[in-house]
Each structure stands twice: as structure tokens, then as C-alpha cells.
Image 1 (cartoon, rainbow, N blue to C red):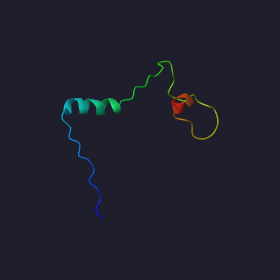
Image 2 (image 1 turned 90 degrees about the vertical axis):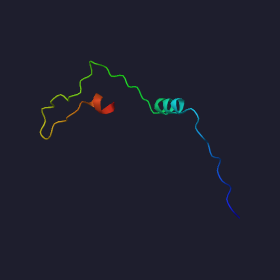
Image 3 (image 1 turned 180 degrees about the vertical axis):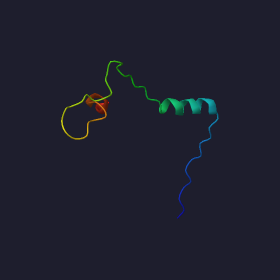
Image 4 (image 1 turned 135 degrees about the vertical axis):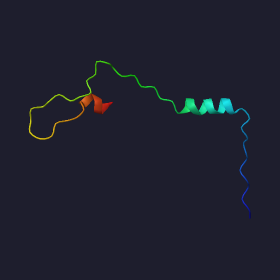
Length: 58
């Protein structure tokens, strides 16, 4: 027995199709300007952190 062929969809409006793809993959992130990205020195031995805990959670 042969498998049925899947339906072929033809895109007619490429401009709208491309815009829909762009909107589907968009992501907006708002950052607080007061947030500190660099970690504060701990005063302990060993390698210090590069980023603050808030930056890591983001």
C-alpha cells in the first residue's frame, strides 16, 4: 500500500508570511537600569564571581 501524499500549501502573500515569521520569533525583554551586573567583592579566598546574582537570575 502506498502512503497518501501530504497536502501541498502554496504561499501567495510572501510579505505577510515573512512578517508573521518575524513576529513569531520576537522576544522583548526590559532590564532595570539600576541593576548591577558585576558582582560585589566577597572578601573570601578563591575566584570571585563575574556577575551578580540578579544578572544570573535574569
